[in-house]
Image (cartoon, rainbow, N blue to C red; front, side):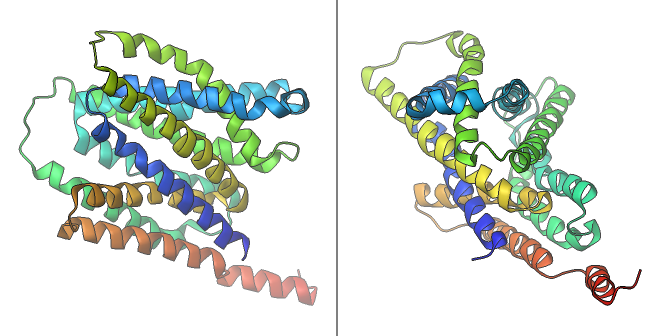
Length: 320
């Protein structure tokens, strides 16, 4: 199994685990997104601390000051700041607008990767990017056409928050991939756990909005909430992030962006299973387009560009 196939497999596994995040609010509807986020990230920090404890004396001295600063920054980008901006965008501008803006994330990451590393020319990746964006658009189109049940008072502020969330996670994907390729003394799994440790500390900031306007819940509801938070922290955060970090070390940045589409793909599949129904026409089209986008991107990275073949031939013949 080559590096690209291994990387795509890890990206698929991460997307399969991350897709469950979208279903948790359905399973525990009595709790706000702020409470779920605070609970998830605090549990992520605790789980990471427990898993790191046996090797803390060996691992922690290897983490240098600049790496702790990077972990703090990456945690803020990928978790706390991203979620705050995303939740604000949904509340102020609506789900449809937010989904469409966030749908540019694979495009943004891939474009940055193509300009930075030049593994594959951006021109060759355009068909794959268009397929991926078309798939995301298919998922949001019904919401755009549906009648609005509420008036959003600050749609421009919501748009700004959505753009901020897009920028935040794009910056995380690019920076995290760069750091993982530079580190040779910290494994992808340990980097994920260290990120969880820092995220748990930063999640304390989310307790303020989570506890604001707190209402009483029955014991069974709290048990469900605790189970959801622990499940998210173990499967989506600890294991899912470990797969994502492994993928980031195996794949070029131009492919990393496309792997984000797996999260959308599995979120749709889980929704169909939960609702016990087959996908509608637009949803089926989205599934086909997303899969085609990833497969086409893989083929572009496996097949050298004509210029790359020419360069290889010139080098072999000793010509300039």
